[in-house]
Length: 162
Length: 201
Image 1: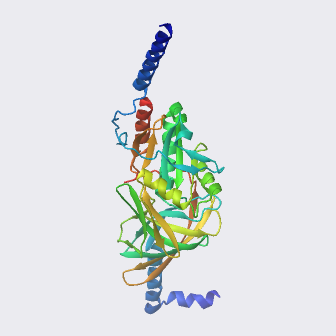
Image 2: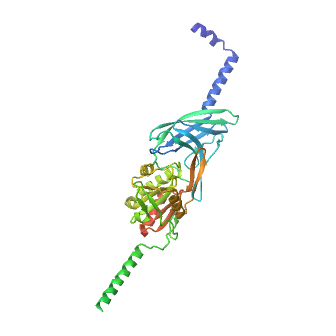
Image 3: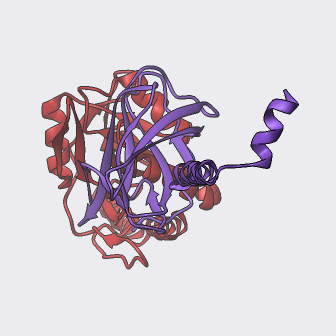
């Protein structure tokens, strides 16, 4: 086994080395393209049909969040809340732009992920699996899986609403 | 003569009594709030009649002696409803003992999907004293109109969401509308203005 491997290590072909390096480079790029931080879901009461998921996304290059999926909800949509004259409006968006290096917040007051037609009650402390699909400017798609923590429904938000 | 005198005394007593009440609970005067909007001159929300979780009809008079704070929303609302209810629970705590007189009332704008039991469990998650009210579609529309609350269904794929007014309406303990709290205020700011309402009545 050793004798078989040894000659390969001693004489690495330049082509192989390049291939190896580029593979490492690709792997690193894929894993580091979009960071997901502080993902959480608001817990529900029994019978409640939908809830929101919140997080901060940061992409390395100009990208966009295309869609989100979760086993806890039959429908997942990305929504945007806006407040005008103290009227809260919500609308579905096609995608959310993630400019290179800039953290984009998904919180109750702006963009957020709607988990609709829930398959079960989301209880405080549950880990809610989310699968995010992000596309970069070259049209390459990246799939990110995160477990969002379910936080108490009655929790006071830290951020002030504006 | 003596009967007339007695009657006069009674009348005088009554007018004195009402003067005293007026000084303590001035119905008409405007209030100056630090953060919220003074609604003292608005005639709104006086005749609603909706059901609570037990199916009993509740109206403004049901909360006499308490300070009702009314907020409209729906349980599928991801943002402003839980945020506002959590803020109300926080403000109630910040008010200390005075907070015991604050009665938070959540009126659903989505009676088609919000069942009474679910509504009750939902509001009580924030504070066990909170109440939820619901009506038929017509009663809901009439109540919202009475408060000047805007709401509309927004189709969203196979389902819908609601856009709605996020103001909390506060009445004094005699049932006079006093204060409108916008969704942008903090719990501390709300608590300060709520205490101002309590000073009046």
